[in-house]
Length: 428
Ligand code: UDP
Image 1 (tube, rainbow, N blue to C red):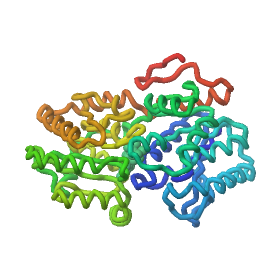
Image 2 (image 1 turned 135 degrees about the horizontal axis):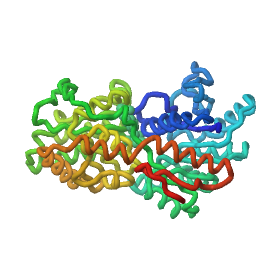
Image 3 (image 1 turned 30 degrees about the horizontal axis):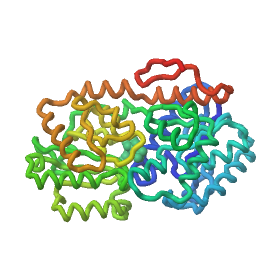
């Protein structure tokens, strides 16, 4: 099976945690690595060239090739400004395929920009298109109340109709897609992302906190990991710290927040508008000694921070899945998440964390207090980890995705069975 994967706006093999790449890159890396474990699979991943000196194609392994094609100027551009370059990229993709005489069995596109290229190439090649949205414009707009790119809504609707199958990470997203676009529920397959248990596991090490002077026995270390954008809701954590202070709650004295993500500390963080907005709020509320921004950290080193923290906070206003939630749980720490999307069901109240109403700092305070009060009981790191790695595995993600591809290629629309997160098989 030869797969044409399209990730137009970002290459999954570039650095993570900047504002252009995050969960989607992790998803693509894990899925691609898993798919090529099947004996007959190879993947060509097409992305926009962002550097003129890079070679056109590069083999990541014997079965994985990354191909960079022109689609707009060859330097990094915010994805909001990339729409107009889709036609150029799509034609270059078509030309490349003809020039190299490649034959693909299926196209898998990621995010709406790639979905447009996917729709074009599917028709040219006469093969099925599978699309994964990662985020959806109308859902984001509802959560944030702000406008998305003027062409996004129509494009996403068009992609829903042109795709042969859509992969979605949650029931909520599936239901919204079906309702908004009037597509058949059988077109949307729920496949959960996973967590890599070899990258994320508990370690006993709080020394990393020494550098930040957050290592006192009774410090309550809260961690945030992810891109720093309004939709991620980090401002709510700052506001919650302010509420703790105003209410004179004992937790305020002990709580410290570590923020990871947002790009390289020296270059990208200083340019980030959301970081500036948050920093101003911190100054206003006199919280500067409560928060430290570390910039992006290589994923291979994140477990040290997850393991050293008392809890991870995921305050997103909109999130399709939230990989950091399962990563923190795999490291054995409780999570405090907003009640949205898949995260609602990942969290088992009081057992592996607490949830709060999105965009509500007072509700977030309550969850912080809950985790803090439970602290003396010591959360069971082993059971938190065991539960999550059993429920979410990249092996299941890969197996289910492979079955969807195979079903479409063989002309039957849906595989006869699908793996459930607990590893069982469910007949369809
Ligand atoms: N990440 C990372 N380094 C960072 C920040 C984030 O490796 O400095 C990774 C993190 O481990 C996670 C992903 O980026 O796998 C973020 O995924 P998530 O689903 O939480 O958010 P998204 O980026 O999809 O909005």
